[in-house]
Image (cartoon, rainbow, N blue to C red; front, side, top):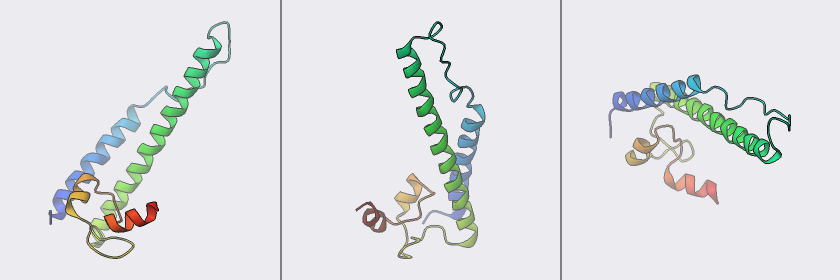
Length: 113
């Protein structure tokens, strides 16, 4: 299994990237103007849709950031790499792809059903 320091480095790298993304995000969630003399109805609808998509992207980034910080805590408590449902080891390839996962593939598939 990959060392905890390698996972810690991977997690911290992803955290830095998300924090930078969140810090640099400005303007996408700004209020859409309702003045039809400046913006047509369809353009305003497009702007509102873009605003909603931008807001959802930020929410997902915040959720991912929280999950990564929780993964760091699991690394410290030696719970990292074990399924929170069945206590089996989570496959290394799965952790390399997403170090914030808390379920093995079997339990994750059961939850999707």
